[in-house]
Each structure stands twice: as C-alpha cells, then as structure tokens.
Image (tube, rainbow, N blue to C red; front, side):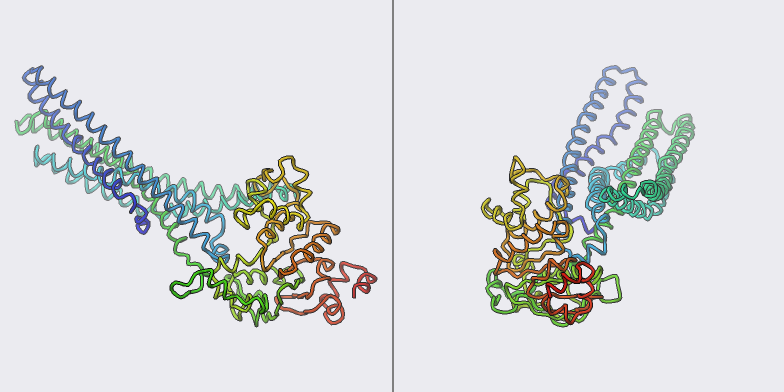
Length: 587
C-alpha cells in the first residue's frame, strides 16, 4: 500500500493543507473544556452573567472557526483522494494493456476487474480518511492527556492507564482483521467471476436448463463471501464496544476520584468537568480512529492486491533500439522481398502446462500467398498464428516477419502490419463507423465501404437506415453471428495490412457467402499475405499452401491436391466433410 503514496505527488499541497486544518480544528476543540471550566468556576460560581455571556461568545467563535477548518480540510482531502484514485486507475489500466496474454491468463479477467474497481475504490476511501483523521485523532488523544496534566497530575494517571489499553485493543483488532479482509476480496473475485461467466453465457445456461445448478454454485460462493464478511465484521465491531467500556470506566473513575478531590479542595468542580470532557473527546477521537483503522485495514488489503498487479512484468516488451532511432526507421528496415512469415523449429508451451502446445514448427510463406491452416480441436492452430503478432513469445526457435525476428520489432510497428480477425467476433459499443475505424484512426467512408465490399458486409449497412452511424450494442448483440464476423473482417481490412489473419472467422457464414469472401480476397488483396484458419476443407482447398496440424505438430504441408495424396490426416478431414466423389473431383 505504501508503494502507492507516489500517486499523491501531484497533490502535495492538498495532502498537507487537509491534515493541517484538521489539526487547527483539534486545537480549538481542546480549548473548549478549559473555557467551560472557567464558566463554571468563575461565571456560575460568582453568578457573573456578563462573564458567562463573554465566554459563551468565545465558545461560539471556536465552533465557527472549527467548522470552517473542518470544511477546508474535507475539501482538500477529498480532492487529493480523488486525484489519487484517478491516477492509480489510469496507470493500472495502462499497465494491464501492456501485459501479454500470458500474464492476463495467469491473473484472470475477473480478478483484474475487481482490482480496477473495488480495490481502487477502497484504497481511495482509505486515503481520504487518513488525510482527514490520521493526525487529528492521535492529536486529540495526546493533546487531551497533556491538557489533563495541566489540571491535576494524579487524576491524569487515569488517562495514562486508559489510553495504552485502548491502543492495545485497536492494534490487536487491526492485526486480526487485515488477513481476513484479503480473504473478503478473494471471495469477491470468485463472485464476480461467476457473475460475469453467467451473464456472458446466459443463452447456453438456458438452452441446457442449468439455471438451478448455476444458482446453487453462485449461492455457495456468495455464502462463503458472506461468512468471511460476517467474521471480519464481528471482529471489527468489537472495537467500538471495547473502547466505550474502557473510556466509560475511565470517566467513572474521574468522577469518583474527582469528587473526592473536590471535597478535599484539591480541584474545582469546573476542572473535574473539564477532565470528563477531555475523556469524552478521547472517546470520540478513538471512535473516529477505530473507523479509520477499519477503513485503512481494508485499504491496506486492497492496496497490496493493487501492488500485486503492478508487480506483474510484461513478458513481451519492445526491442531495444539505438538512441535516436525512431519507429519509422525501424519499419524501413523491413525487406519486402524476403519471406513474409518464417518459423524455424518453433516450440511453445503455455505457462501453466508442462507439455508443449506446439513443437517442431518450420515453414516459410512468401508475400502475397494465401496459407490455410487446418487440424483437429486443440491441434494448436490459433496458438500458431498468435506467435506471428507476438501475442505470445516462442519457448524455442524463432519467428520472422519479412526477414526480421519479431522480437526485433517495436510491438506497435509489428502489429500495424497485421490485421487479425479472432475466433470470437468482438464489436464494441458505439457506431459501426467507430468500430471499423478501430483499426485505422480517421479512416474515410470510402476506405470503410471498400473494406465492407470485400468482406461481403455492404448489405448489412444498406439494410440499416442510419448506415455507418448505426449503433452497435454491447458485444454486438444486435447483429447475428455471421454479420459480426463480416464486420470484424471488414475492420481488419480497413487497415490494409501486409499480413491478414482470419482465425476461423467465417464459421458462421453460409457456403455461398464464404465463397464470395474468398474470391474477393483473392482479387482485392493480392499483395497481402493471408492466413486462413478453418475447420472446413472447402474453405482452404484453393489456398497456395495448406498446413495440417495434429497434436501441435505439422503433419502435412502443400496444396489441396498434394495433401490428398500424401497426408492421411488431411484425407480423413476431407472425407469426413465431403463425399468421395467431391474429394476425387478436387484432387
């Protein structure tokens, strides 16, 4: 948590002014019992009405000044805390964007969402309370003790006993509750993950009538979270009654022994009342401190979880460049006459597994060629193309793009050359135009319509009265699966990439539309190297080269006709999808 204090560096003034004004308010508060003692011992004792009125005016003035100081402190503390939260939230979002798929897979999406929202909110609330109370409450406690010594040393010994006892209670509860608050946040992660999965897969859940099972699992996670929250709540709730018991016992002792001292003439009635007021001030300050400790404990637990995210180092970083070398100069280093994509003895293993997902992958693709990738489920097709854009780094071997190792590129330069259409068609809330300009900022309507024509998506726009200004709902739910796929293909084409990767992105298209799409790609993107992953052999049979994957290895490479002759895996795939007559026809 303390590592996050740097986010207050732009709010140094507010972080100093807030606590200082709280101290000033506390000073006025500490003077009030002395004024009350004078009113009792002088004004009331002597029935001096003018003196009572004068001291009453002093009390009102202290109240007004204290309120002004408090409002000023609240304003600056809130401003600093809001700035702290804003800066922290922005940096965490930027840091998450810099993480590779491997780190995001390791932490989990639901956990990152919790830390971006709930944890940062807790940390921000903790900072706000600390700036307001971390000086005021201890100052009131210590100040009240010191002021009591100016009245009577013997009676003040009650304060000496009570205050350390209160400190032990607060410290003990804090030490027990901090680990429990960490468990609360972990339980919140589980509930959030269950919620997001259920909402995302609500159609599947209803289709298989598993609502009761999902409700039961959600209830189990919610009950676990409830139990932890109840436990930590009970422990934290002990703080107020225990502090009240100690303080009220101290007040009883002051009144008892103070009464004896008054009878003996050692102290006045006003001074006893002042001592009681000081003990009451200590009580109120400790109640505020108790709330601060609870909030700060939550903030500490949340802050540690935030630090854990920042501790994750991106596994994929930009290549080191000579001082003064620009991204443009790096791009000029690309040799367009070399192979568009090369892989040499590539092996890749996911971080949480022992067996490699890909092994012994070697092939070369010339610029402008169309390459098909086919294989069974889990063969490593999507993993292979993720290595081209360096979304994952190879475990062994090397991947080259236009004759240059992908690790020698600036990541943004490498990915600017690639247009990727992932398996899951993702559209963002906003207009269709905004979604298509995602690939190329400021793309003109002519460029967008050209991409739509190639992607066979113009009819989608023509059917909408608002055209390109049609709003896309969250996740593109107001479009069918095939429409979403065509729009995401168009988005990749707007960039006019040197390498286009279609990761099973025509699975929802009918055969006629799929054939038109492949024909348009051959005619309009001749200079682009195209990788097509598909489960349909008919989609890939016209490719210049087809890679057949099985269990993470290339078991066949060549044209459709060549593979039908010498690749048993490809033959099996084709015969499972086409009749023998169709297979022989295309051989």
